[in-house]
Image (cartoon, rainbow, N blue to C red):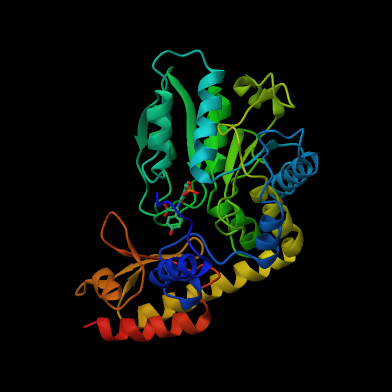
Length: 377
Ligand code: 0PR
């Protein structure tokens, strides 16, 4: 570290340079991300609560109340008046926490988790940390998990089954209803990763799209991951882990004797109250109606892109939500788009994957179609 502090000007120059090198959502060129421009109300709340620490909620009782209310709102969106949980740092922490609970509740030696092969890599982190063996069930052609394969892979060592509502690569939604029945029949813990789909599917349903059920209205579902910092429009970092009942959380209690509360259940100690306040602010500012409008626009853009691509001879997968996967038999689509400054991702099979987040506007979609017209031979 240098001896003397920088002047404001020196600091400003360094920060400006860093910003200049970053991509911005506003450009419409970020098509690979599940995050987006945060809602203004969330940004303002975040700044106001920047110094609060929910690791010591006795000091920040007002902020704790905002977290409780935000979690309650998300729970009610996901079919439960009574689910309990926390605002966490994101989907990774939420998934780790869920598998941690599932493992603590069982007394199995050499515990296993059966999950779809489409599962996000955060489960691999969780498994390594928690000493779990991951047993992957295969995906059907529509990318949802083959429930019969899940059934075949259950053993007396299975401590949890995972279902996904909006898988990372395809946006696919597992048949959580069937997984819920299976979990109840076998008495096994069921966790649903709705990090992406949690703020999309309920609104698509309200808009009249046919969507699969995945939430606490299914009796076998024990916990749900849902990320406000994805389609929830909250500033990063903001995830949410919900458990059907408070008793599920008790297995995580660690004594925190010198703090204002006697026990703590979260993975993190010091944790951001700003995130919780921001989630609360965004949820309250948007309401169901606000989210429905955003999801409707994202879905319209997705279907417009699909139509444009098909006219140009691309092979497009049927979208489950605002995420589109496509390829062209004669073109390196991802390579060509990247060369032209568009951030797109590649699925493990090599297809192009774009997420039509709220920062991707109709004019960007039209521009993209024109670029793809040049790319298609
Ligand atoms: N579960 C699912 C279904 C996810 O898609 C993701 C992340 C996670 C869990 C983990 O969430 P966190 O990253 O919040 O811990 N999905 C995105 C992905 O891996 C995350 C992302 C977002 C990546 C924005 C890039 C980016 O620019 O693609």
